Length: 265
Image (cartoon, rainbow, N blue to C red; front, side):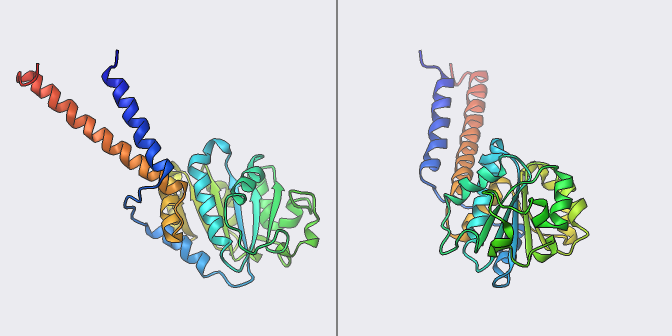
């Protein structure tokens, strides 16, 4: 026997599936912090080196995956060299997944971008990376190639040799900030929505230039890139489910008061 909850579950499934199959393009307001990161990447000097790091695992992919995908898609459009670092074991594999799904243009591995191996130690890894990127990586990339032979890291020793360091994380950013704030490198961050309050003091003070806030921030960045992806699909799905929730609240109240006043049997 079909019950009301079955209908609700079916409606919820349909409303989630539709935008994931094809984005609807529902309105999303782009925040200043997302624009700040976009502008920082747009202003990168030609030939400069940029760092991007992952500090999360596959469990966080639905939110942080679209963030890093949008960031890297933007970086690969710019005439810069890209250094990819990971503070989690899964990081290099997640980077490979992202790289296989973006348009890399004419950039070539080793010359224009490099994937570093997993650097263990969390906060000690942040400190080692900042002091000597090549040494922290053991002198080789993720595939065992000597970094001294790769043009992508030519002239790069400390984190200050990078024009911009973007880091994505599923936790507090305090560890990175403790180790990197003493350097002059410009910092940008992408993080889970629940971690935003802890990052705001660094953003407001200007130490962090650019912040992507959860899946909503990923959607905003995709709008700036004019390249819809999982971020916009996800925000469309969230918006539709909110509409369903409001409709159910209204319907529930109508039935409740209708029965009290005997409008509905």
